[in-house]
Length: 299
Image (tube, rainbow, N blue to C red; front, top):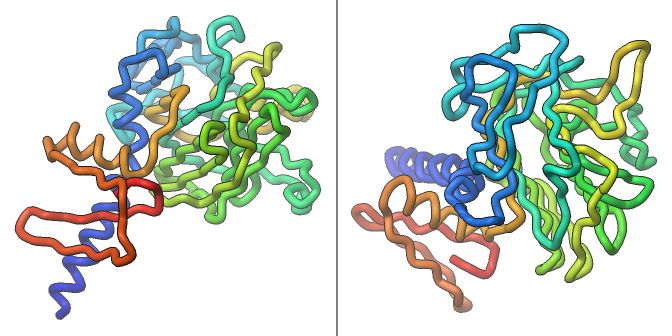
């Protein structure tokens, strides 16, 4: 009995780990115009980062301290340390502008500090997020912001044609270790979703056919808030920690599609998606067989 329980736990852990990286591997292999940006942070030296999708020019990493704090170990290859004070990456608005009905971001990061914020800010809607990616103008209900507040509570905000949407996570980030975060805006199906380490930790409805309004006067920032608060000579709301494997795509995929893609790509496993599920759902496993079920329309 104990052996069966151990096997079951191992299968569950395997499924969670696979799904946690599914966003990244699926987006990485989308070779069409839907891919906006892919940063691997494997440069190891220098002051620029290269877009692996080939769509954007090399970007300068801004940092008062030189040389940059590259790390040889990350989730996949190397990573880059952001100091929480001066390190950020910027793409001008002419280069990168987030807009449209669908949007998806996948990123690994390991925060080493959480900034203080007003304990009542969330309930009042005045939160000042530490930004992972940012290109927004809340006053004009435009753009996107992915970040976190005090104690590591994750938040995804979008300015869309049907208004300003704020989606909070039900679970907090962990400090000093790698977290995989994915955020989805899907105007076609009318929903926003937030994932942390493979689990859906937040979802909300938006108006069907809603689309992200472009924040036309704002640059696209990584590690810095578009509307950062200032303290003396410095800025707050800047990310402190490691970032690796950031991918942004103007498309979305269902959970089952993403998992099927990663299994096929990484392990050569042919996966059959079932688009109809009857009143009785069961699972069986045999030699070399693993059945996984999701809450979406595909299994």
